[in-house]
Length: 372
Image 1 (cartoon, one colour):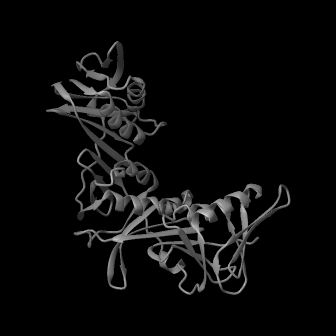
Image 2 (cartoon, helix red, strand yellow):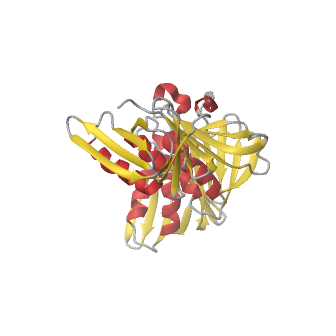
């Protein structure tokens, strides 16, 4: 194998591959990236056995071939090369070394046989459709903060992507929850997505997928089966196993009868919560909200470190209410608001609270209160 490729192009492809590789693993080949050169393209494939990413790039291929080399080492080398450099990769197959050359720099990296590299089994996808990158980005970005990190409830360690029926109107929906807060985000259902099986996309896949969604104009090809999900652009294909489990009936925890409405500037609210939470105890992170006629008082009382209070002007015309929340949860929910105002809907100090972005019903958040 022998090829030459522009440093920036190579860095982008290798960066995507090396981020999938697990730093600590007992199978040496899983630390490697599979490089395959043919025609005028070179592909970089990496896997951790649950996720596989293939990144294709244009290159001048003098001799077709393939090899595997440490993904992290190759990425570090390419990252440290000067901008605009032309990088040559060559492997004669016999020496067990991949030679990387750029200008006066020369590296010889140990390789492993490409036959040992595990390729993810192909899957029959029952549903195939395309979706704009910015739509998918909104669905996953706004829901991923609520993914659970609790390993025992593994079925909550991802985002549940499925088709939902809202009063006869089908939508593409992403939901995540950890039992303390919940995010439910809707988008128009793409053409041909009607029969898509509901799948739980793992946390790591959600993070890796984000790199495919940077370009607003890109169309992402989405393929879904009961066991796998695949997201692809013309140059990058990300395939992942889905979490084998049943996502709970989240609709039961979304309150329907919350009538006490408070509207507040989302940016001002987030900054005020952040300020008063500075003195909250690390363990509880509790912030108390007291609402009265068009007025919100945020307060923290931490016997060990002190207390804090801040007042905000809000739109609230219901009876007086006091309710406590974990400051971190409030901040995370407030930071999802793209519009100017956040609308909170309360029932009582012991019931879940609903938050929406203005009057937009396609993004709904639920947060459980705590005693303060």
